[in-house]
Each structure stands twice: as C-alpha cells, then as structure tokens.
Length: 116
Length: 116
Image (cartoon, rainbow over all chains, first blue to last red; front, side, top):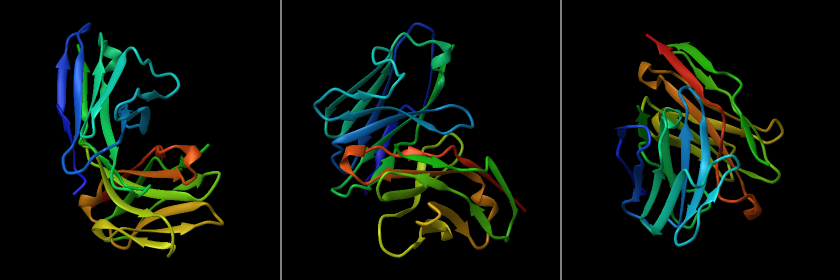
C-alpha cells in the first residue's frame, strides 16, 4: 500500500517549452504532496508543499510562476515547469503523506528532465 | 528550524563487513527520524523510522538504526554489507510540533560503496 506513481520517468524538451510532471497516489488519498528537486550527487531540495484544493506553499527562492503546482484532487498533483531552460534540467521527485499518522511519507520514482 | 547532517560524503566497505552511515540532527522538539535509500535515477525507498519507544529500530534489508537523544544521532547500521547495498543513503528528520509543518528535512546524503 501507499504507492505513489510519478510520470514521466524521463523527458527531454526544447528550451522555451513547458513540461508537466504528474504525481498520483494509487491506493490512498494524499491531502499533502511535496515536490523536490535533486541536483547530481546532491540532496533533495524541497521546492513546494501542495495541499489539495488550495495554493501550494513554495520554499524561499523557488519561483512560483516558473514551477506551477496544481493539486486539484486527493490523488493527483502536477508540477509544470514553464518556459524551461537548460538550468532547469534536474531530477524531480514527488512525495505524499499517507494515513493519519504524522510520519507516513512515500516517494515517487522521480522524473529526469533534460532541457536542450 | 530542523536540520540534518551526514558528515560523510562516501563510505567504502568490503562485502561482509559492518556498515555504518552517520547522521546527526537538530530539532526544537522531539524528532521523527527516517532513513531512505536511493538507487540511480530512482526515487527514495523507505528503510526505517524512529517515532518513539525502543531506541534501536530495525528496518528493511537487514538495516537498523539507533536513536541517541543525548548525542542527537541516528546512525544507520548493517552487520554484514552486500554489494547490492551500494547506493545513496539519506537521513531525514521531521519536527513533531505542528508549527514545524509537515515537511521532512534531508541530510546531504552518503554514498555507500560496497566492494566485493
């Protein structure tokens, strides 16, 4: 149980285009989802916290207009990288809280974004 | 603010030898502590967590960790390492008070290399 499916697993796009990454909770309702960015050989950097039905809370330094997060249902959150540039190339990982416990977190398999 | 430190960027160990990956944390209250493992181009896999109770926590794949409140540490251990344990390991902490929010804070990661 508590499976998060993240798609696509990898994507290559041209500079200036937008890319959408989906994160779905398959067998539970995720009221809170998290989006992380990971640079090569580095740790996970929290970008934003999304709550179903409300605006995402972005971490300091993360451009909300560039990284659009939508959490329209209890099973789906999306991250759209708008007007992508090569410096946006990175590994993006979503995570969701599950259950009523304060310590249930599960992670998607990640998306490798390459902007050329 | 909560923080996590993993002092070693890389740990090298021979197969069959004990493996230890160090983690120290800082929180304002009592912590929830987690260990995750990441294989190349994949998301994070949960290994174990400490919430309360016994300081020695046993997790997946033969891993265990010991919560030491006085030293604010939560080191990951495995008595006999396998080549397949070679991966990137992350320690994470969540502060219990609700004011700290739901988010996990990750350490910088430790790359484990188990040599045959």
